[in-house]
Amino acid sequence: MKQSQWTLAIVLFAGMVFVIVFAMNHLGGSSAPVHETKQNLELLFATKELPNDPQAPLKTIELEEKSTGFQDYWFCNTNDKPVRIGLNSKNCKCTNVEAYYLPEDVSRRIVADARALVSADELAQAVKPYQDDSELKSQATRKALETPSDYLSVPPGRLGWVRLNYKGEKPGPQLVSAAMWMEERDTGALATLQLKLTFHEIFQVDPNLEFGTHNAEDLVAGVIRHVLCFSITRPNLTLEARASRSRGSEASDPLVVGKVEPLTEAERQRLQDRMSGLTVKCAYKIPVTLTAVSRDGTTPFDLGPFHRRLLIWAKEDPGEPKSVLLQGRILGLIDVLTEEESGVLNFGSFARSAGKRMKVTLTSDTPGVQLQVDNTRMPEFLKASLSPVEGRRSWILNLEVLPNRASGIFPRPDPTYEDSAVYLKATVPGQPPRSLRLGVSGTASGG
Image (tube, rainbow, N blue to C red; front, side, top):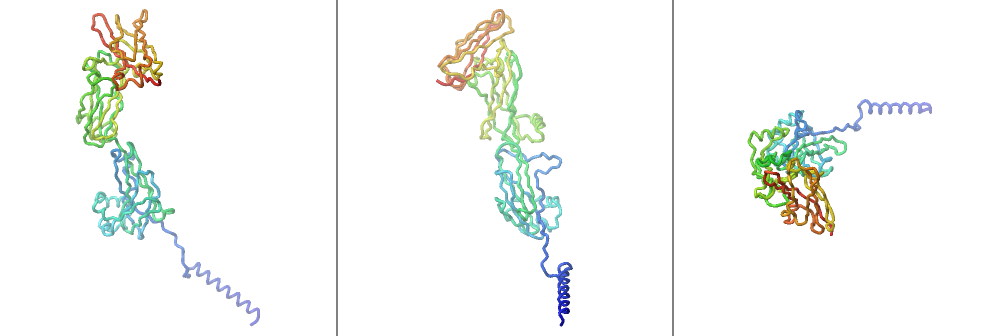
């Protein structure tokens, strides 16, 4: 064969090879593997957020503080292949996450053909009767999901759930959230499960009780206010209440705390109407009365502004007592001109060895009133005297904490310091003498 014929044959052969390869690659005649696009498999969740109320998006599940529990989020594998599910992240260390799936026969008993489900609503209706069935749930396969590499492989057509466990560390709203990966940890779909909770104290009180301003004469008949206590979580409470005091016994206190009384149904309903949709399971009231003088006749109520504390305990609550601030102002024969809101004559902090002095102006609108210091009731670390202001119904009260006579904070529960006060005798022509009390406070420190 001539050289030119060989050359032509090679060219024709090369062309045939090109045509065959082109046809195999582009016209489907090749048996070489074709790369498929990977399918992102997901599980169908009945809901991913609880409570799920479109009419009340801020609604939460109400629980008692420090309580523990869990919430299950049901799912179904509607795919023809197993789907893996794992924990991608969670928002709180107080939460741990588990995943479960039911045996094939149990899944079919709930939903005959789970893979035919097409909506979250359909799944929610199907599993609703079984959400609290502990016997059914005991048959499930379980996997704790502690790290992002942990997963549970859910077979096709199976029902299961992700469980969010929680603990209420402190009162207030809490969002429990877990992001779940499906099929592929890094590239698969994500489902974020959320649980909206509000934890409540065992019992609650209003921390302030305002008495307003009253004349000393009003206290003769008694001025009564009520402290309200209630529980969102308990059907009943066993309460005890008493006034905090730094002096004397209950009998020598002109602030009287009465017996705890349950609210009537009408009163409880009125309270609940103010609670923004929460249910008040039980409620009580505690009467607090301001009296002109203590039951034993020794202690008149302080003149001027007053701040006292009411302490309330519940047998069901092992924590510290609740504290309610009782405040108001009593107007009497004299008015104390002091910048202290509490009405107490405050020496502040001072060196014990030096002592401390202060002057306070007293005034009166009552004609003919006479004042004198009652030294028979003076604490041993105090000294006081009165200087009338010429031409006015006013006096300068000269007070001194004697050097090296006081130590630490006063008043405090101690025989020497519990009744830290200056007592005055007020006399008005034609009337019996009145006893007035001015509280004193301070801190004597150092040597």
